Length: 327
Length: 253
Image (cartoon, rainbow over the protein chains, first blue to last red):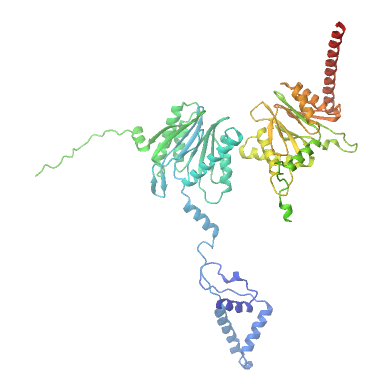
């Protein structure tokens, strides 16, 4: 209460001073002096006040009197200066602060997923490792989400984001079926998801997903991400291991493969990505989407696959280690 | 002020929604409209009341397109129709944008009917005073469809139907004479139904034909006159055959 009265009296002297001028622009110096701009009337008032305080005739002491008022004014300013404090961290450059905050929350899409269309349908494959920085939090994450019996979605980015929004998409697809008495197309489903993600753009969602399915127009594959982008294509790989997967996939891809050949190609591509990328590993799952819906083809542990692809060559032992005979 | 917040459409003690029924009355006063579905064609016909001499008849379009593959004709308050048609056109485009597919006839009918129903259950508004006939082809399908909606918000599919003035007599005629037709026969059936209640002549009828290939086509007056002439000739021939047969039997007896 007292502070308020103090404030009010202060303000009555300098009514033109807006409250925002009390805060220092940057949290550098604790007591940053602000230059107060007064209008003519206020300056006159201030001079009047000073003159009233000095009842002495100081006409012969001009230099002295000239010095004193400035000192008095300085004291005054100190006395009447408002308490100043540091701004909270990040207020200086708020945009930079916001970007950094998003980066710390973003799990930089540590994963490898891929999907491609060929003559017999769509193959979808993914690893199963979840990492938090350098810590492997799980080796058995389901990264291929079954939206409905004929549509699959892959997970890359934030696990919670992907799981929730895919589930939500599943609900919307089912509602569409019930309302329109026919299944939603892969085009429509991916567009619904992309529009939802676009409306959350900039709020820190992290999703890089592929929607794969078979509808009236045949096999369909779309890449949708949390920036609101949506791409139609024949071959996609998403995640930190995607460059390695692309290398193997693009090299071995032919549109007229059989289902088994496509299955093997997808499995090898993911395996090689897990070999070189630290954020990918665990189990390779491969699904196939055909005209009657999806079917899981295999789920192989990558370490076992490694020894299958690169069996250990028995090396001759030079020196047999023998236990020292008991003394 | 509080009085106007109340819903205008409230139930009567015996379960009627009088505002909706009055809206149906308004429809019954509107001009006649008929729709006939064939196997590959669907036809809409509307009665054209005599145009005042100074009016530019081209600005009075009774059969409108909602999208390249959907058309609509209505009976009732034309101003309400304008509002409903605009909302339906926006919805057609919005659907194309969100699912990258054109609307099906059933979808847009459901949307229009839903809109009509909303206005029977909101505060301070009155129902739309029109019934619509919606025709079109579903995307990726060559089968035509015909739907009807009314002010209460109900809708259903029909092989042939009529609304507006004297719709009962038109519907009776259609029930008696409907058969699966295609192409020109469908057009003739629609015109015959309309001629039951409308003064004969091309300038009193507006006909639009929709096919899967060519979309919506409004028939010229001259074309309609041709069809009317054909129909009259057929009718005369049928009459003569009946009379001739009757005469021969009477002669023999």
